[in-house]
Image (cartoon, rainbow, N blue to C red; front, side):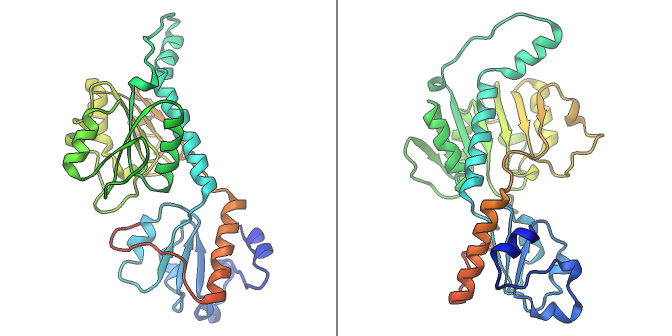
Length: 296
């Protein structure tokens, strides 16, 4: 990152924090971070804004709540594309019962499941932001019925929009595959718990590409064990890497992924970061920042 940024920001002095002299702490006005140590960042007393190279900024929001410093999320079309690719891949995996055939192969069983057209399946999204909207478009292209739940009702072509607790229940009642792409905030922590998960259609499946804290894992396992939920594809966890002692690794109805649904592309992301900084130098305006009350 340092090498790429220095090449693109030739007029800036870019220094790794560990190489920054204490006498220079008060000269820093912009910090480019991924998963920083908040204590170190707070030493930069004249810091105006923080540019994250991640989409999720819940740790930064928690660490800098009440501070004047602004937090800017990475909004990268390439990440939206990568995420939509992952969502489509794993929705099709669940739609075509790939997990079922994998189990059958291990048992040397030759048996097919009934095929259901995408037009007879409902894929619902929790979260209709940049990532969610891009993923929704891919599924519509492939013939799925799509619903979406968000803080406020959204008008997206061919998407049935829901909001509020009653709206969440109504949406889950008709869902075959649920995709989580909502930011983790105080309000969305364990949004999917035993009660809300029970609203899902029997035999529904879940994909979590948001944050581990969106779903109460213990409650999810209970519904998987009862057969209420058929399968869960989990790419994010409350503790990462997922501890080797976690029961999630061996659960027959869980697919564990190592947080790979949407990587930050260094080429496109660095260009966006550099553009933000150059614009800031020109007009002294900080790019659109996170609403610290909402958490995103």
